Length: 284
Image (cartoon, rainbow, N blue to C red):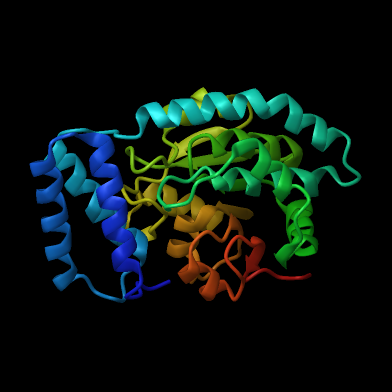
């Protein structure tokens, strides 16, 4: 998915929000905005938005000296999600279709996203999504792929959301490798965050190698790309991973909530819709 002109104001807003989390020094924040704004001149529109994100967060680290501005926020998100975990497990255990409910819960966790300028109420919004209709619903194909798969590569998105991913992984019933970011970027999940979410109990955890807020294959480790190509089934969470992987030449199932008008338009859905979309999968 390429960058659109509407992405640039969003990039600047992200930079301002994160700059203010990282530092109270107005001069550093002004420098950050100046340098990111200047970088737009040479930014190819063919790049994905998350490639631009890699530039932003590298600048934030460089100018503020803060490696993980969202560290405390991520810890709080994981704590809050773990507090909901027993209630969410009950929803799955009491559902007519446990796998489908676990998918809904995993998508509901995608609201925990500080890269978009949207407020959310964790409990209220999660419970709403567990009953919400899907705008894209490739569940039958997902189920078929899952039955055939001997191993699954599950690409995570945000910390806190990672607790919701654990609930789905527990229902998949197959060996899972859970993929995280190489370094802190926005509130995306790292190895430390995944372990704090309890994912080490249900999956092997690896880094993709990317420093972007999404999975861009040409920014990933060769070892991850090999696993990505060889996995029987790939599950991709969230908008950033969709931006980076929506045009890959293999089967991928995307689970996300459309929180951005550009991504909603690319998917041909409305903002706030929930999506279970498969690409390049075989029905037989």
